[in-house]
Length: 228
Length: 268
Image (cartoon, rainbow over all chains, first blue to last red; front, side, top):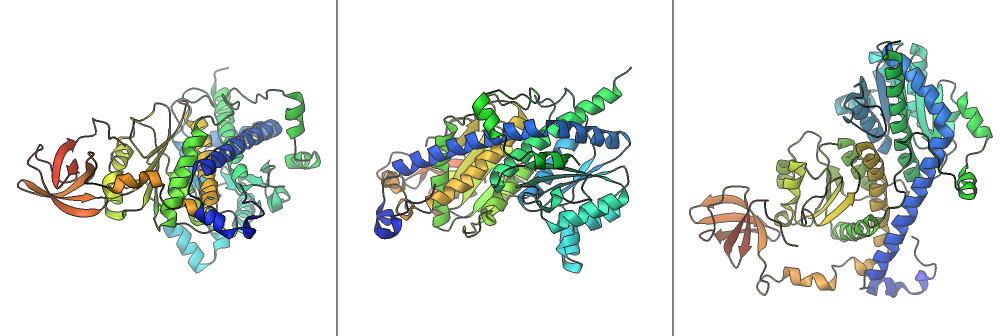
């Protein structure tokens, strides 16, 4: 990955490099190593979070059964995670090895997708409130607030969790590193943490947590709905 | 709270896995069928070098994923706003979700750009956009899973086995994170950011038997104005079935020599 430490002594060498074969071999090895790291972190994370995932899924299933909706949010790459969650819950794949057959579409929305709302709130008030103000407008005690962060420190997530808690919503957070401020936030009931210090590896395992959590929610709902 | 337990226990469970070698099974779904990247790593490496060369020359990367717009957004933000402070911001943009991919790209791309798509092989809209890549002068990368697209469907086909959408979705995130990382590694090798010497044949039109791919802009009788990687030009169309606007044709020495319908494979 990193350039040789002696490169500064020979600045002309890299510039004159013309054979890409050894670079391609390095890149290939690097990809193999990172893939293995990501796989290992995924397995560790899912194992460590198994009980917590079941607990959160049961709580979420209760909310959905009571007519609740899921509001997902995050910044940057985490905003795209929220967008993916909204798609997964509302338009699940017809069949997947992750969940039960014929998963139930559930009401979910990303609070990071509407550029008119995001820019209006940011411009008029400030970026810290872009999610919380939407929860003020839409939130109901039966709803679920799910925030994605890698650092665990995003101000606008913490403000949103505070608003969600105030309204009686279920709060779920996904964080990385040691969980950051989210881990100690009294307004966040459930914090799923990917123990890594690489933003990329954190997001990769957060995607896995998200998928397994969704599958467990589906299982919990189907179990609850099954005739006694 | 639950997390107190995780915190107290320390974060690193890796020793367990390494020492015990126990296969962890959370659910059948949570267990991966294979934990190695396989041949995909080399395809990814080649795609990364190709993108680095295009970025280095000033190209813009267009990301499209009609089925999974969140992936397209993620790829673009990864390149524009790097997670590692100090890495250069690169020109990447998402084709807006819901937009006509072909029409948007036709109007937007410039020769030297890149199109990165995430889609299954049966996504007709993506397939149609990528088959036009050479006429538009763009480098194309197609990420997908399940059945593979036809040979030559894109300059770089980075493909995952397996039909499960969620499993593939997780692996896409890994692949495009690595695409970003490897692209930046290439920037540390400025000598390799020029095109490979072996590729120079491609720009030699007159000595090559191969036709260049062109997209018809307008038709006037037995002539047409077409768009190729080199710009627009007027060609003779007498040798082929009369084409219409947006049709693809092969051009050689000022004449269209074949209609390209998408049924045939485009040779690389």
